[in-house]
Length: 204
Ligand code: URA
Image 1 (tube, helix red, strand yellow):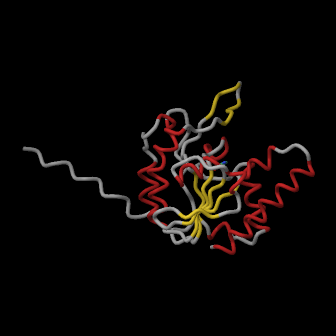
Image 2: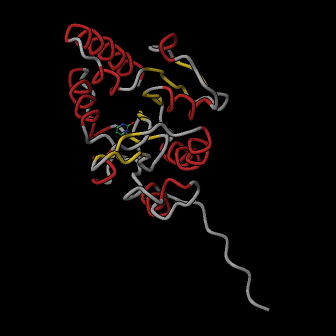
Image 3: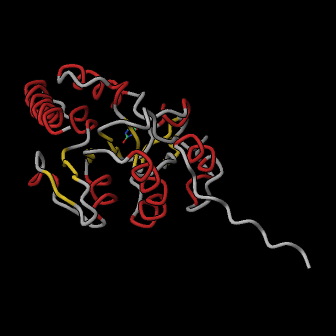
């Protein structure tokens, strides 16, 4: 009689979880993406920022928030005096979902099934890091963290406490600022996001 397969031990560290996630097949998004983009930052971080999913540049680099939205995010964190090296940054969905258009790859929104499948990894990250505060950057992150759709525009700047006691700060996704054409409106929206990040710094 063959010995039973040993149970795969649950990941004991972020490093282990990152290794496991490289081969993730929990949803079909791995097929077209270049690689899994796992979260990044210290395992003892006080705060975890959660975005939507890697974009084109993140998919190629294998790191979260390094493209245009990441640059916007970095500059606002800087202004809010939050040190990105001391926080953990991740995404609700860890593979890039896109539609090819000529040579370009156009971001497409992850669906509820993909968000649900990838919660496995987000839960693991939160389990291991045990942050004081999680920041949901936009609706996808909020849906993943709270298990339901929430009206971000109405609830931004506020904190929702989950049943497990985890505090979730709600705000917009930084790419929203990038998409605003009118310079004045863009500046105003950047200011609002900066205000949110200053609140985050108070709460962390
Ligand atoms: N947008 C996200 O939500 N996450 C990234 O990592 C990059 C852009």
